[in-house]
Length: 232
Length: 228
Image (cartoon, rainbow over all chains, first blue to last red; front, side, top):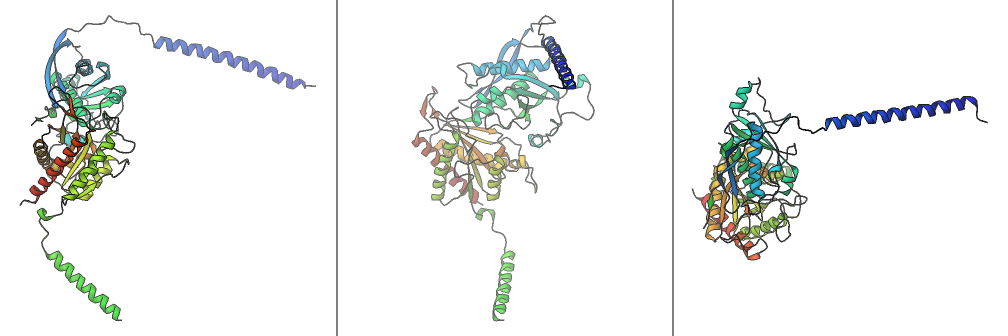
């Protein structure tokens, strides 16, 4: 014989369970609706087609270790960050072509973002390399300059590459160095204010590109002189 | 008591000898021992690049290091290696070994399937004056000028051996922390003007030619280092 108080307790717990289940279902539905609303990718403004402009790309050649400037016509956005990403995308598209002299798979989508920030005052690469990295890149000056000064003064470009690009990049000192230098040189040729370049891979710092070229340091675009070649 | 006297006499004699030795001028740098460090890149978990014959870069670099060590030892050059087996060696540890050896030259050995011939790289750090305390990540800055000179000697020897050479500057973590003249040597297949491979990395004859040319360059470097 089940006591009466146990029956009442059982019914109460059953009702509580059902109420909680209904509540959870309702919360789940609301969360789902919020997610759908957040992912609404319908365009809110018509895409603008940027006019084609001349861009100078510093194209690498594995056979002689050279970096040669090539002029290409491509649509370039007005925004400097998007402009930098467009020229680097074109450069990596050239490297992904089957007959490329510096063959690197990945193509233009390998550059996720290019952030342009006010450059810290660095005298040499040596100074840049020993800059403390804790808490970011130490790129913020004590007082934030006005917007105009940020766009006209020396800039640090932070190039964010995809992990798949780094993973598929051929391993070797020459090929990795040429990729890094051609990116730096191309940024310098098209955005003269960019004096320093840093690299991220999937948003994180990575020791090397594919086992050789150091990606933890700041590269100076003034150091992107083509490598000398010597042949018998 | 006799033992004490002898000990005292020996200590006094040793002290005098030490004092006379310390009074002598230090031997000139040209007469100092000549040590070469061979740094076989990668190793252990770090396989490096994958070469065309399927072998990892770490195996090629170790084989080249062993071969070059033998050639240098046969020429009376003291050699220190950063690894003798398939072991993982941290870049900082490689620089530590090199700096402790007080080497007169260091070759960091690499291999790649891209490019052609031999690629020689010195550090891209801006040359700086030697200082008592050097930053670890830029310790090579005070030796960059000597590294470029070593690169030139290597270039001459390799060209003399009939190989194509590409010179450049790069940023390698281990290389930038070395305090001695240091050059990264990357061996790539030999290619014709039509970019066809004429000697692959698995070609034993090619490997021997590279090692012999590098050994000849280091002998030349020793001769230059010993000149007043």
